Image (cartoon, rainbow, N blue to C red; front, side, top):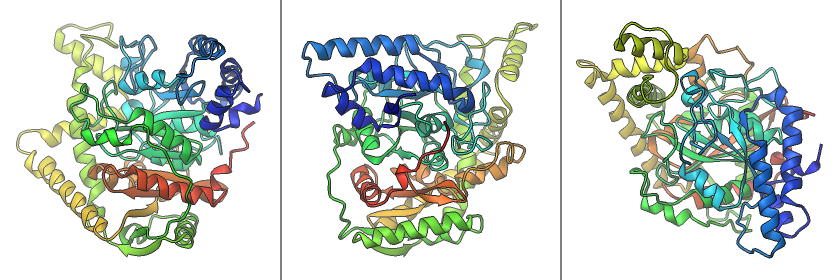
Length: 491
């Protein structure tokens, strides 16, 4: 297999533009590796080999005639989480209810990838409708962690993270509702960035929880993550939640400076008092924070007192929004429809019963109950009040600090099947990521070491639309360490 699959997206783009590699060579290298390795990892639900090679040939032809507008991701192979609409390409959200759905349009992020010259390799696996933390809730297949095939890749963007970690894509897109980019990035030893809510258009994203969902990059290094963000970010009139401030992230570029002089770094004491944190994770994260201090940052303790209630609030708010968003999947307009039914109501019931998996049904029922008459104030309203407290906690912390650092996850990747029958234990995997979504903040997970041979992620959180500070901090850490260079031994 070709060594080009080990290169970063930025490096591939430079080699292509310089004429040292053809787009066809790059695409063929990745397609060969997918054919050889993905049967073990199962990162992809759908691959698009013919379309990828056709795109590569066109890019080569344009470069041959001297086209200088090929794009900042020209010839870079990209994987897309299968809850983003792709025109003419099957889009399933890893659910039987959308098993054969082919969208008639592209999501905004996909449209922008095409404009940047990227080559789409296919659609990656996820927990069904992005509901899960291990990708074991997929209704179609089980993705494995490239570091240990007996372990999960995290979720819900497990396929996207595994694809990058296993060199099955140069870069990928995931979505993050409660940690679904950062947690699998940590488990798979890659970089995962959740942008500020409203920074990246959600048009064409199959909604889970509309006030929490955000699309972002998963990459081999911080430079690639920043490059992809600069392409997919920006205001979009087709998304009512897209923010005008998003335009300041368009064409964003990282500087070369690795000094963190003057940067104030906060450590939330509630995260580090957690009894559920593995000793190896604690050690790696504390060493990472000490390294930030060695680069000139001032480190101090901060408090996020509402953290202990954030998980509870999330698992009321997210299911409530899901119960509304998933009402559209009824067997009438598109998607799966049961084959035998006696009436319209019977068709609705059987279609949803057969089409949705157990976790999706669980969350629909929780959300519907929380929104029902007589329970709205006791559950949903109370959860929204807690969300306000979480936002205020972060605002208070950012009065003293420029970024907040913490573990991305309390543990390393767990074994497949270990938590599948214990939903509460599974939900706890997102303890450190969920508050960031509730507050709508940017957060990145970067590799910061290994614990028992498995990757550990350091989470860096910033103020709204201050991705530049978050990325600068992550870049400085990455450039002065070698953790991001560690790769699984998967052959």
